[in-house]
Length: 172
Image (cartoon, rainbow, N blue to C red; front, side, top):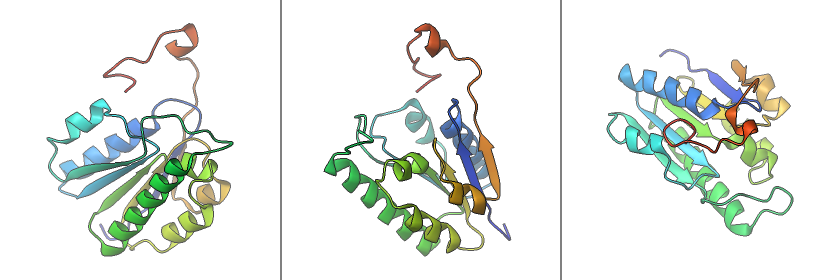
C-alpha cells in the first residue's frame, strides 16, 4: 500500500470489533501482516481461537476479564492499558505490521486509562503506509476529526434488550 489510512469504528451498537476483525482478515488474506491489540479485554474470546490459524494475523490482549470502573479505575487497569499503549507505539514505530488494530482504545481513552493527546500524537506520527484501526464506543471528537474512515454502529434492535444472554460464537 502506498498510503495507509485511519479507520474508526465507534458507536453504541454491536459490531465494532467484528468489523475490525473482518478488515484485518481481508488484509491478511491479501498477504499483509496484521496485529490487533485489545485494550480492556483479557477474556478468551472465540475470535482468538480462530485467528491462531490465520497466517499473518496476530493478536495480544492488554486488559483483564473484569469490568473497569469508569469513575474509579483500578491501578491494574491503568497499568495494563499503559503497557498495551507502549507496545502499540513500539510495533508501530518499528513498522512491524501493515495494519494495526487498536481494539477498544476509544473506551480506554474515555475511561482515562490512556490520554487522548498521546493517541492523537501516535495517529499523526504513524508510518505513511500503515493502516491504523481504532475501535470502541465514545470515540473522542478529535480522533474522529483526523480519521479518514469513521463508521458509527447504531443499535436498532438487539436480543439483549429482551433478556437474551450473550451467545458464544455470535456475541463473543
